[in-house]
Image (cartoon, rainbow, N blue to C red; front, side):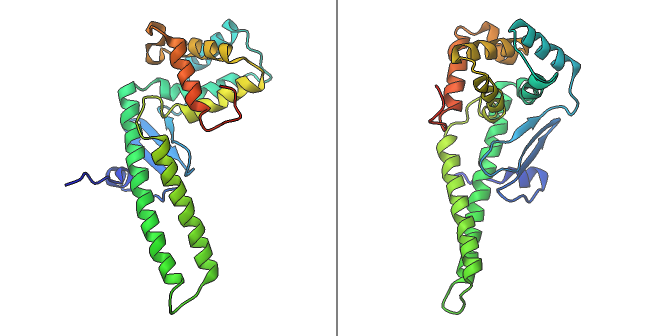
Length: 224
């Protein structure tokens, strides 16, 4: 008998969220998104830690990064710190929960929307406004499901990192920082936060280059 995917958000949290929202809590870790096409943010602690500020300031100073506001780089790095605290295994497990749940919710939403469409346009009734709105929602769900399957066929250990690191990389690019320096900056940031033992990797720069390449995969006009 084939494995049936489940809505783990509902099964473990009792939450009836539509596909547009995802909320999952595991011990002190919270995953949340209210965007149909974005991976969830990860929160491991609520208060900005002084150690985070100190490490980011050290990173700024070591790399001579300029800023217009005191917490400019801290605000960009802060969402990453929550990811840094998770092991690769746990990140993959959490992303698997998100992926399975969203696929289940989207399939159920598609079926429910198709059933609703049949009730708004049939031999006995014609409701064009409702019919068009439901069709628009149906296409949105189908596109989201297709994108979900195409982008996340494998549950890699950096899947939860891409969306939260994007604003930082965008800042690098808006400041005219070359890709080579971007890689060096990220390497130093990862090492300062002991992320995945980057300081001990045999080829950390290639690992970061691969992260940036994946980040730009859906941005054909970006420099890769």
